[in-house]
Length: 113
Image 1 (cartoon, one colour):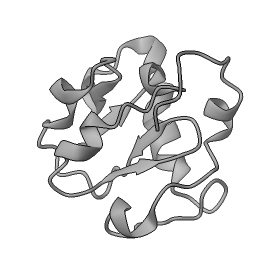
Image 2: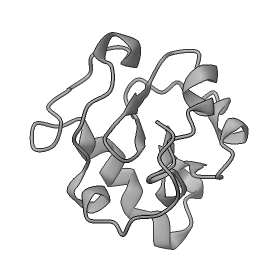
Image 3: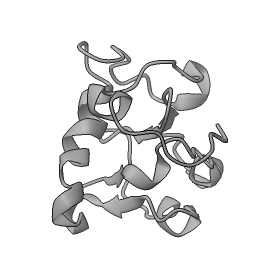
Image 4: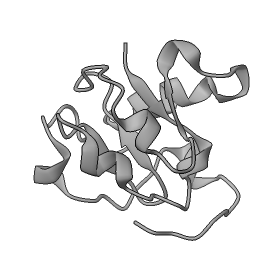
């Protein structure tokens, strides 16, 4: 089980969740943040820290947001960022790419990065 970042983060990237994550599993993409599903320890600290309410437990995703479970996982794969499982976002830094669904998402909010 893991937490998932959804539409509320696109073009906002507040970063409060990054600051409180005890295992550094929240990575910065071009337009949104992504939680690495294999590195997340399911502690839930990030969810209440998110000011845009963009984070959900994977099994509590509302139906319209369920595609973001795959989007968060696929972001780390060879077809998108090729990050794999680096073991911590701090060593990777921000990447400029996004999952194709996020890249195509209509612009919203103001980028805070």
